[in-house]
Each structure stands twice: as C-alpha cells, then as structure tokens.
Image (cartoon, rainbow, N blue to C red; front, side, top):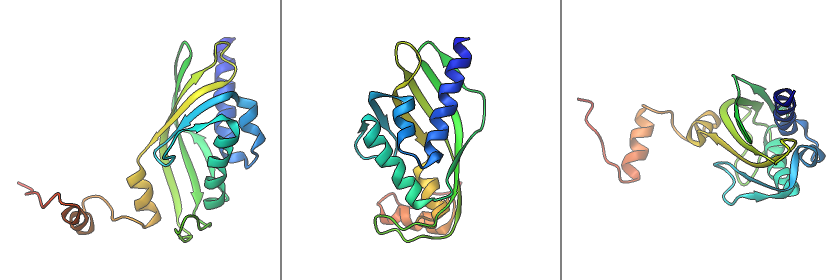
Length: 162
C-alpha cells in the first residue's frame, strides 16, 4: 500500500511539471520544499518559488510534458525517478529567441519525501544542460568541429585522436 502511495506521489510530481497550474506544487510538496536543477542558479525554496521556476519552462515550452522512462528506485524516504521532458521551444526567455525546435531531455528526479511519505520535501533534477543547449541550437553538437573550436576558445586546446 505504501509503495502505491509513493508511486502516486511521484506521478503527481511529474504531472505538476506539465500541468501549467501553479497550485499543483502546493498539493505535492511540503511548504518548505527545496528544489535544485542545473538551470536554477540558486535553489528554489517553497512551492511558490518552485512554481515560478516551472513557469519559465511553461513559457519556453507551452506544450511541455513529462513522461516516465523507466523503473523508479525507492528506498525509505528517497526515490529516483527517470523521465523525459518533451516540448517545442516556442517562447523567448532571457534573451533566447524561440527556435521552434522540438526538444527531448532525459533526466532523473531524485526526491526526498517527508516523514509520512506524502509530499516532496527535497528534489533535485539531474540532466545534461549541454545537450539541452545543443537541441536548442545554442551550442554545437558533441564531436563536431564546432565543439572543438569552442573548446579551443575556452582554453582546452586540441586533443589528438590517437
């Protein structure tokens, strides 16, 4: 029974990210939820800050949705949930114009649940921000001449392939 409750909570967490409804985070998170991902800069504290962060996703990707991609690993108060975010980049934000590109970003949400395992207390999403930038056309693909040029500019030099 407890496993089903945790599965439902994680399902609702993932639905919240695609819901475009700020209130959903209040339903699945504690009042002092702590959230981090590679694009946050600083951690987000509380459901309102988390909803603000999600609203950036919704503005950039109005059709964004989250889909489960594998088995969740749960133990005690912790859950690792693999998923992917899909959407079309239609909204400009922070100087990045809409590209119209369809993006598929794989990630793992690592969740710590509250003592009763009914709400998310802490969450951290892990994903490849470089790959996201490649899909958006902001950075060159890995292994290309463009990537090597970028590495040279950053001071890493060229590496021999032998």
